[in-house]
Picture 1: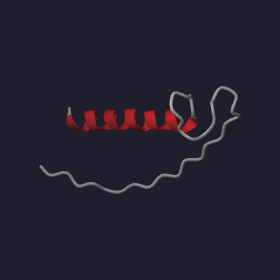
Picture 2: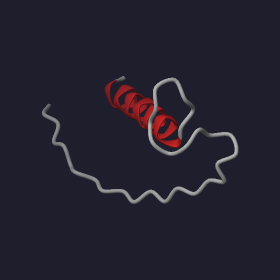
Picture 3: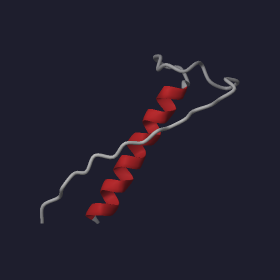
Length: 54
């Protein structure tokens, strides 16, 4: 069975007070918004793949 990929577009609105983060843009060894969002997107992608193939 072949899989067809469909392109999805999402709009993500992010708001934060900045208290416990080291800024927005990814920086080596710092806790930034971009780093956390990328980690969550990667984790979600792996979980979706696993559910589709198990």
